[in-house]
Image (cartoon, rainbow over all chains, first blue to last red):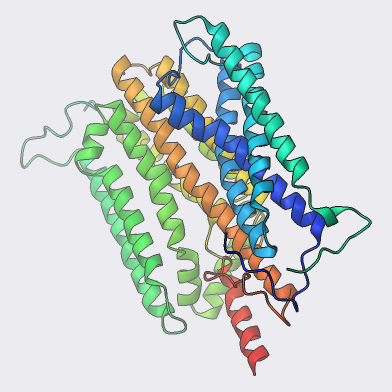
Length: 171
Length: 298
């Protein structure tokens, strides 16, 4: 992105809060995308593996699902506004943000695959098929995404973010 | 007379309670449109009034009118799907547009000082403050929804014009109070934090989702399964769409306010990336900021 570095006269944003903003924004956006956007557009509308309501869930599971769904949209929106906020404060390392997004997608898919599908039994990935390969693929993909995200975040750690060097070079 | 058979009254017969209700509702909405336009004309004497607010207010009233009178309202008494559409319009879409019209600001600017002080005293009073807390308003909306669909109230509201009117009035009023509490444009001396306002939207959105799926599995008395399922899905996705708009407006308001704080914190050499918000979130503070900027330039 053609983000102009702030002029030398402006005080650079403190590095640690800025880095935290970038990571929180990416993680929230990733969780939200996995919870609401991928679920709606890929599994409900695209593949049509998920149903509106499979009529088999308990009221508790239904309520839990409704909150997952509502919180998913909220963190998607907030993730994007936090990203915009981080960008206007200091130049953004996009690779680091994308790493946080990957970690968020993986973390949510893992939670969804283990807690929602297996423990609470809110819904299944697909109906009328042997679930084992689907569960293995779902949870395996979640772990891989989470690991990839964590790896990218670890490798893009800003050099000057440590307490020994509190100020980052301007520009 | 029974609730069925209305609408088939012979020409020249006296109006049924249902017809009276529709006429009264449309007159009330027309009065709200006229009153707003008068207030805006008076308010414009002092400061310009953005046209988008007037458009939002009038469109909101039109949505409410479509929900309470005319073909959709008539269909809503027979079809659950049409009923859901009217409730989405009346309880979510109309309130959002009405709130964006900033009617309290128009009223405060139009009234003489003494009247404006009286209105603002009422708005600051403890009962109003409790009622307009986002979580209280969310409970009012969610509780009303469950009361309507999980009890015989829905059947009762189709049989009695008075109950029908009360349900509609509650739907519009509760929807307005909630929307104003989370994304209100009017001055709000006790506006809750963005976190609390987000939580209120999440709460209402989840209530909607649970209710929609409950109705999908358990159609209300007298509603056939296919109609209930279509209506439940409309409730779910339509409610989601409006809730998403509310979430974006809450976050955008926070973003604008945070931007103004950034500008205020670095007045000497503002970064070109930090542009002051185009649209002030809290109308009450906008004139003060304009004065401050003018004074800074002088």
